[in-house]
Length: 317
Image (cartoon, rainbow, N blue to C red):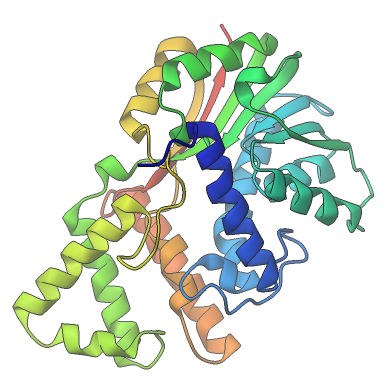
C-alpha cells in the first residue's frame, strides 16, 4: 500500500501525464496546438477538434466574464494544469494568477507562455506551484476548469474560494456531471461510433465485430457508459487519485447553497472522447466533427442527450 500523501500522489500523476504528452509533441496552447497522434481518441489529436471542445469552453468563460464582470479583472485559475485556459484569459486582457500542485505542468505552462506571440491586448499571467489551501490574496474572480471535482470537500473548497473574492466577486467553473449520464446516452454514442467504423472513419476497426449481435452490442453500450463515467478506457490508468472525488450533483448543490447563481448551462455530452477517434482526410473528418458537434449541442438542448458537464457562474453574496 502506498503511503504517498494525497496531494503528492495527485501532483505526481499530473506530472507524469504532462511529461508523456510533451515528449509526444503536445503543445498546450489553443492557438498553436498541432496534430498529435499520441491522442488516439481525445480532442487534443487535431486543432480543429480542440476548438470545437476546448475553444467553446473558453468562449463560454469569456462570455460569463463579459456579462457579469468587467475588463482587466484579477482572476485566480485553480488547478490550471498546463495553463491553456489561463493563457486565453490573459490574452483577453485579464490579470491572471494560475496555480497548480504539479510542478511539471507549471513548468510547461511557463515555457508555453514564454513562446507566446499573441501579445496585443495581453493582460498579465503568473503561474505558481502552490496548493489552493495555501493560496492567499484578493481576486475579482476565481475559476475552476475541470479541477473542482478533484476536491473531496467541495463545500469547504467553495467557501475558501469565496473568502479569496472581493465584494461581489465571481465564481466560475466547468465541471463533469457523470452521475446524470445514462445508458441511453451511451447507446447514442455507440450508434455514432458504429456508423463511423462501418464507413471506415473510426480508429478502431476491430469494433466491427461488436456490431453483429444484440448481446455484443449491448455489452459495448455498457462499456461506453463505464468509459464516460470513469473517464478512461479499460486499459487506461485513472487521471489521478482524486479524479471524480466529488460528483456533479454534489458540486452544484454546494455552489447553489453558498453563491448567488448567475448562470448555469450544460456542457458537452460525449464529443471529447469521440472526435479524436475520427480517421480519414481532413476535409472529411472535420466535416464529420462539425456535424457530430452540432448534433450533440442540439440533442442536449432538446433533452435527447444528457450533458456530461456543466458551466456555472455565481457571485459572492
